[in-house]
Length: 536
Image (cartoon, rainbow, N blue to C red; front, side, top):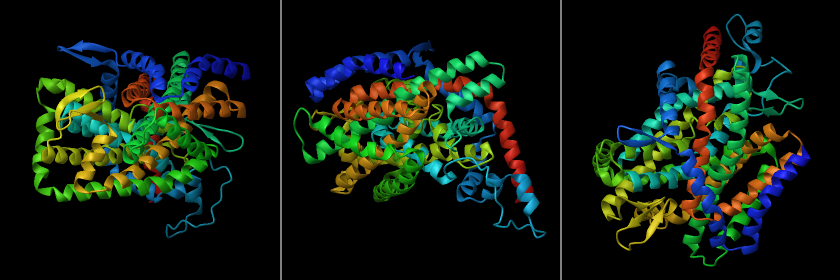
């Protein structure tokens, strides 16, 4: 095992040496960009449909999410109240002890005593902690920088398709996180190992697809490690570095590297502690940072309330716009779904890794909790960001929709290209002067929480590939922290190419598995609903 890890490190030494010897941000980017460009082109391979080139991965994502939404009778709407009650802990007794034991100890009046004990309880974190950890992996710079990129390139109409992607993505999250708990593995010390790697290998083996299951599980684990380096890491450190550099007017060829090293040290302190430490940090950071961001968004939205009708009019009209400048109708759909998929990760399977660690005997209970994520992430927070940027452009006429290159858009006033977090910062600062300083803090917290959550996702995949020894853990964490530095030093264009492709690549093995295993989710769901009805 150690020899395999040493071989892998040896293969990476040339790339890492280039970054270290030259030391400058530009040199790091020069080394990183060719691979990022090639990987993006590979993952986003398209097929011509009705005159448009549509990425195969988006077709798989949309078809799968739509099917699950119809098959499970729109769970994002019909089971939304149930999800809130599960997070609140209303059904904690049956989830913790099991239906039979709860019924055995119930009083004649139907009360459940506090004296039930069960030493075989599995899991490491509560429903809320699992949700907070998973949300911290999705609610982040995809909501701040990603939405800005979507609107700049796809126009206001991209917002509509982001919302649609979020709504149907709730069903996909429900399916993958239910399977994550159902097929998780619990070690002798109580440590939980779960995620698509396990439900693909074990679940498909049960369904007489053993070889396919092993192939898909191994492929997912490899891609998830890469995604943890990219979307869950490099993109986050990149945007945090951009915001800090802009706010403090930092200069120098190694500014990004320096910021990256500082971030890497802070992230390293937390990820050494494992999922319990990560959950304890994210359950505090996520509500705080989301609260600040949502409050500021609401202030701006209400201050522009007279334009709310115009803004939504632009969103709906733009969703079906044939405007060639932003790629026509299909172009807007592609931009919207691509950015939403990067933001909420529904279909990628990553969140199932965090949800697998929950304390419950009913897998579907956590699937129900998980469907809240795309709603919080995309339907609520992404829409708020979109409205703020649309209001900003209505007032200032800062840029023309579709007038962008890669992940940046050209400002009309100066002719300079800005992208991602810079554009969002300008929009918020135009209404709340000085808010860019608060936004910088929020961005750093968003980036920090996303990185530590994704470090757990990547580590679980790494363990699946290389074993659960301490040496394997250390090697992964060192590589993860190196990508914090690489991300901070590289340009947004290079980082977002790599990050987008890595997140979307997860859809291939994961969605294929989900489309085979969904009947097992139905059985788990029915079992959970039956247990609730018998007790409550």
